[in-house]
Each structure stands twice: as structure tokens, then as C-alpha cells.
Length: 142
Image (cartoon, helix red, strand yellow):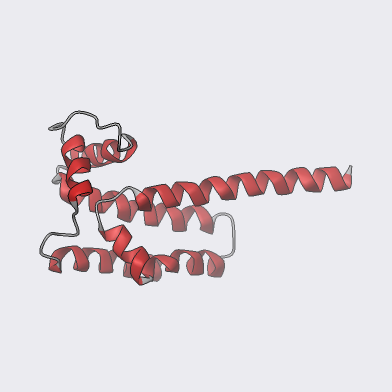
């Protein structure tokens, strides 16, 4: 799984370096301004993603733009690591390799909250499905 994650991170870095605007959009700039405390909270956007950008930027000393890319990369790493604890290595590698698909890679390259949101959503689903499975096993066995 490490080669897949390394390949995803390498692609993210290369895409962000060769793209003239580093994969930013008008929404990206709102997130970045919120993260760098240059813009008040906009209720249209979730506060968690700019908070993660601000924390990573503060802890690493890198700009908000590159901190946002690091946040998305760390979300992909967390996705692979968390699922490797739950399923086989092959399954976790295949699940993580979804981020190599064009649209998923593009989404992760942009300064958008979708990558973090999808990782949290799939993690939440995995936890709920695990609880439901355990309850069903308990019900059938007892």
C-alpha cells in the first residue's frame, strides 16, 4: 500500500506544481482566507477544513496554499492507514488506489474540503457498518 500512497502524493505534488494556479478556485481562496484569518467565517463553508489548513500551516510553517495540499495528502494517507487496520492489505490498497482515478486525483489536488469530507464519510460508514455487523452477530448467536 505504501507505493500506492507514495504515487498518489507524488501525483498531487506534480499536478500542483505544473498547474499555473496550483489547482485553486474561487472557493479555494475563501478557504485560504478563512484559514489565514484574513476573512471572517463564511457560513456557506464548513469551518473544519480552514481550521485544518491553519493548524498544518502553523505547525509546519508553510503557506496556507501548500498546507491545504498537505491536508488533502494527509487525508489520503489516513484513509489508507485506517482501512489497512480493518481489511486486508490488498483490499486497503485497492480502496486507496481509487484516489489515482482522474477525478479523485483532481479533487484531492484542489484546495477543496471534498477529500477530507469523503475520507471522514467512508470512515464513518465503516464504523457504523462494523457496529451493525457486531450487533447482527450478537443477535444471531444469542
